[in-house]
Length: 94
Image (cartoon, rainbow, N blue to C red; front, side, top):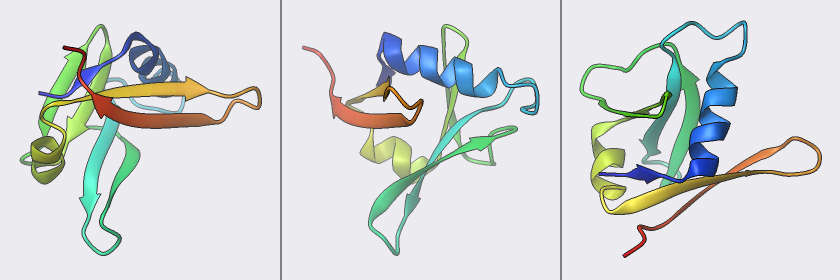
């Protein structure tokens, strides 16, 4: 199962703790077949078939194909000096 770094947990919690975001919302990761990539978006709730990762208050909703692709990976996040968030997928620590 996809794991989250401490940075990713903090960034996801900050994104979902905004006043306009409903309680229980999370970051959703889905595949984009046309682009051959992954898409990230804020979602009020998981879609049918999503796998839910809840780590230290950070909720992540994984579309089934994305969950398969990311099964042995770790999600990290960084915020630059301008406040832009960048997520990165890497190998889980051994």
